[in-house]
Length: 454
Ligand code: PLP
Image 1 (tube, rainbow, N blue to C red):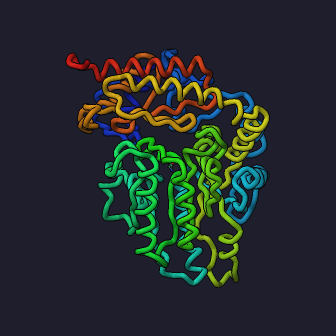
Image 2: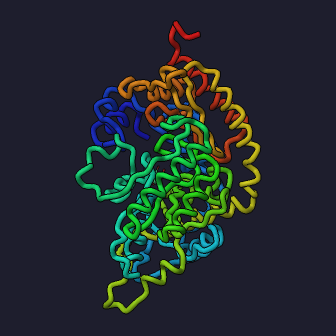
Image 3: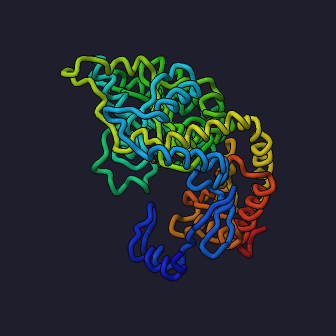
């Protein structure tokens, strides 16, 4: 292997990192990960770190899991890739059947792509074109939550709401209707969850009523908004959105890219409120964090609307080179097999309970304003002043400083501005979880310490 100095030199010379101000990157010495083992990442110098963000919210059973490695090796000995355009392949067929069985009733067809963003982009195209085929040609706009994040293509950014991510591309984005997200901690009308829920549902209903017959669909992340700040919705909000979608006869699209595959403590977040979407997007945990694969699932009603004579051009004009890739599908099947064999959803319940319990302790820190947790996903929001909820200025990079401190102490994290995100692999052990939480606690304490704190 190349020595670390050369790797750093080549990294800085040839690589452009995602969502990164490269000027800052060039000024620092990066950690270069070489291996993974369970909940740990190991760098080129042999240092171990707990993977506190499950490698961008993807990892399920830990790194280097034998059964998944074996499935990958077995598949690669047959074939790595052949196209799904005009032909089919074995694992893509098997996985499609499995996903239909695994997702809420009513979702009957699977359309593959490569990542969360494309699964959302496909959902938007499906919904839009469905209405065109149904003759409701004015249904062209989507309703979304105001701090949503659904990915980075032009379509996915259009239905997003995190300003820092999309501001630079404003002119490229299409028209949408943005409605308030149920951000209990910072809701303008107070922090009673039920009041926040009713307020947000009323605002959504106003938007649906105002744009009646123009709305192609409502899109949201069920239960918890991830990149929007780990914002947990009040109980009943999701069910309320489903009721509105049905009342206004529009489509409900659930982005389960982050929430799916056990992250919230059920296989799908929408199971908690017995909600059945018209379209569901999944990625990240689909391959247990191994390979880029995504799927958009939909109903027979939507699928059937695309059937017609070739010359009618009712086809869903979408497809990527690696759509339905065999390696990804084989790995996803092995992932699901572990879920089933280990009864994983049951197995992780004590871990979730412990996580919630321990996170509550963070309120005793002087600058922790809000702790939000949903299954094995959490956000710890830091504030300059707890009483006024005054935010730390963006440019102070408090979240980034805390993550740097955590790395020095042996945990890998990545913040969302002033919110520290905790999304460990689902199969992290309780003692590893304790180590991670101890590191995060100490890092917050150190970085936010001010001599005048009480
Ligand atoms: N949707 C949600 C809810 C996400 O959290 C993400 C990524 O974090 C995406 C979509 C985009 O997924 P990807 O980064 O795989 O394109």
